[in-house]
Image 1 (cartoon, rainbow over the protein chains, first blue to last red):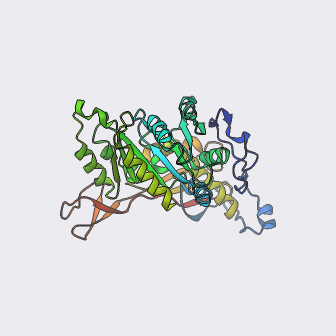
Image 2: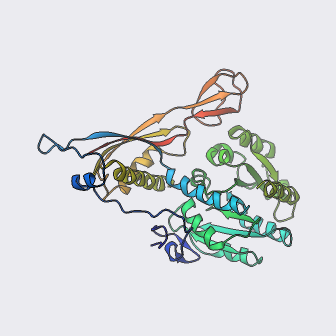
Image 3: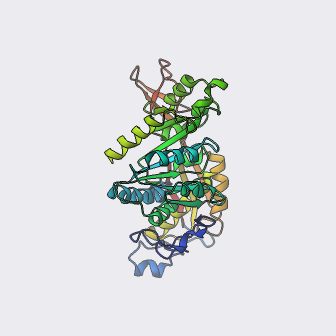
Length: 277
Length: 113
């Protein structure tokens, strides 16, 4: 269990260690274990009196207004992460896509292109293995691997631990490569500046309307593997049209991590975003 | 199966509320789920039952309140109903429509004892 915020994350591991082995932010709230409150305890702590039943065997019930978003806890952690990152002027992106869209290759090429210009740190999310983090480290950039075990997405809490551990430099770039999955990561804010969705042209052009939540949550769509377009029936304009139908504001950049096509536009987008941060 | 994490989020809310409001058992959870949210009600009900086992909400009933999707047409300026975020305006057929409601995932109220 985490000694700082009292968390226990089940199967989640960061660089092979259970999540609680290292502390998260020192100001993280302490999670408390809740047990049933007795009438005497309630009175002692000034809580509203607990009513008792007048009909034996039928406990009295009452209605309690809650009106709270079920992602409230994740969103609170995300706010903490965002405050920390913007405080250091770190430009953080949450890269999302289906498995095999080329996110890691794109990251490797991006880091190589930015060498000597900008510091990049990477948080890698996968269910198992540290292969992606190793590919990133081979470029010389720091990388941390989160293994979610059975989990299908990164959440703000585990990413907070990873941010603390990777300790990104002032005015650097932090790339969070989410678990390859076009469904679940859409709902979880990690504290990033933007979600960037990577769609490779070897997938169907109708992915944006098949998985609308993800394309709606993203600020930018990178159409990757564009070097393969001559060999495919992929309709680029239709893919962009579908993406704008679910998200009129989404920006689109066509890239090929392999040939370098469009990488200039992507790097310029990163530079503009970092400057704003 | 992000419904599993969301169900865990609900349980945390219930435990926080129990501490705040001083109750020991949850009988019913009223949950608003928008049609444009990323939650499948059946999957949520399944995960909820699994997650609350052994907790203050074991055996609690989950009442899912369906919240319709709504949008505002940027073309004709009228409000329209949406089943999907990319649906055209029901009045003039234009896309895209700006989503104005139906993305909620919220614990509304509880019956407790």
